[in-house]
Length: 99
Length: 199
Image 1 (cartoon, chains in turn red, orange):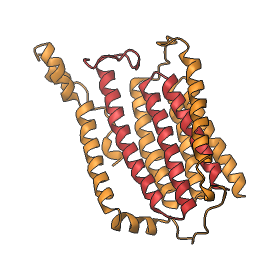
Image 2 (image 1 turned 90 degrees about the horizontal axis):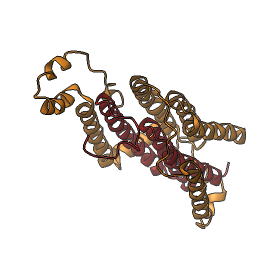
Image 3 (image 1 turned 60 degrees about the vertical axis):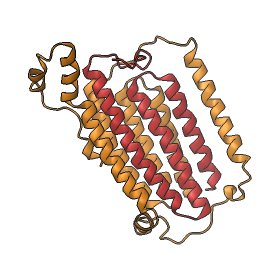
């Protein structure tokens, strides 16, 4: 397969993830859509690494994976903290920094 | 053969992503994301990135998704309200997504990268296998490797502080004269999913 197929698929996935972040209101689903966008970036990194014939793009993808795992851990910790304070799990209603 | 695999994996990845966006129950969204991640691992294998594919399956589809399943089961899969803050948000957002896709396509296809329409150069079979990636990670990118380990440690500590029982006891105690904080702490064991699972 040519590299451009992978790049087009990656930009399609990125657009779908961005659309999900704009539409959905539950913080868990917004984190899931963020994962989709990060994975789209990973796919284009690996595709460009194959195109150039250099493995450094794959190192980038692995580091992005680590950062995504950190983001998930902190984000889910925030969601659990929000839930324990009986606040609504809805990003439109959580507009004040002061809980 | 490669084209057939690509199209099936691409369909899986795209279908999983659309499922995450469209399914109302967050629990089904998590399951759709698992399909998406496995399809992406197949795509990584097609791009001769064996180690990245293995890490994708083990780290993402394994550890991170277990965290998501636990948290979704903990907070409950309630469906969202239909209330819209911005009128027409549900129709504006797909327009915005389509505009983003068109813009990205123009940027990529107009970027005069000659190798974009090719397979890429022929690589030897050891391209992207664990030995090559490990050598690169521990020699040339050692600084990034160590920095990411510190980042993982910080994230684990931060999640424990954010979701721990004690932090909530302090905050509630400050408003209610800290009378029921100890009783509340002993009431249930810590239900946070252990952040060390991803580290």
